[in-house]
Image 1 (tube, one colour):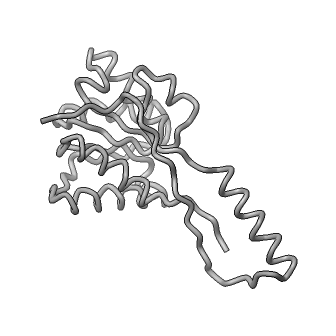
Image 2 (tube, one colour):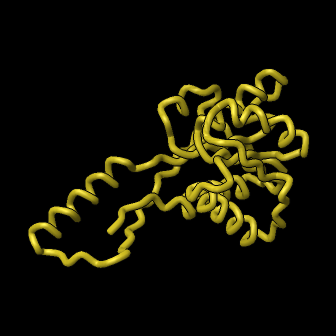
Length: 180
């Protein structure tokens, strides 16, 4: 059995939040193109756009890697496309975008909206604080240990390929603005 993050639902919720603020040109900076988490989060992005009747623009999706420097390397190309918001698939990627924006005099939360993923410690120290979603790593560990103990004690039967998804918590800070 597996206890895993609900990447797709969390990405869907954060992109839906951007849409609720009036954004239609929503870019994405994702991890590696061949990564499971990248694809699950991209599925959430696509679902939110589709439900809102927004056609996905493939030019708004950039695969970079998972580090600050990776996001920085694709930021100019993405921002030049005229996106009003960017969903970064991890907070480190948001950091790379923030660095690029600062160098260009573009203000996150005012001139462009930025949302992250992970709620790493750095997210609350960005200026402005990064809107993101928190990974419940402690909850995942606790649920996995509880399930294992039940299986060992025989009070629960192990089911092949059983997957339990753990929801993530949305954290609203000041990096997202409303557009008309």
